[in-house]
Length: 108
Image 1 (spheres, rainbow, N blue to C red):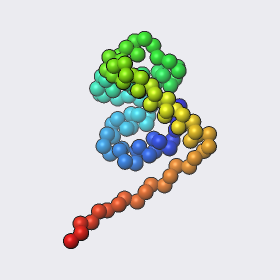
Image 2: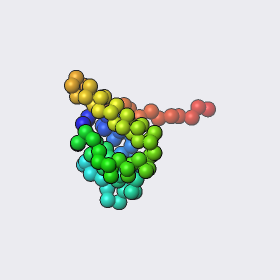
Image 3: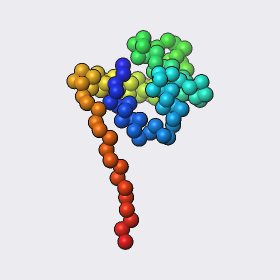
């Protein structure tokens, strides 16, 4: 389930912070140099969206990292993202224009 709007919103503010992770995610790939836990999470997310379920081995690798409650929260978060993505896609919501940067000035 993809949605252009949330990813574009993420890219504007965070692309410079983690360029390798951002570009790998944007290309629907996981960096081979990513930490083991990130690769496990990526595999879980990709498998869940692709197959609508995860294998026992994929589940166990993420559950070992996040525990029961964390795994439940992850699945809930992914479901929420899918719901928001469907709503944005069905109603063809436009991508908002970038907001101008606010420059703070020191008052004297």
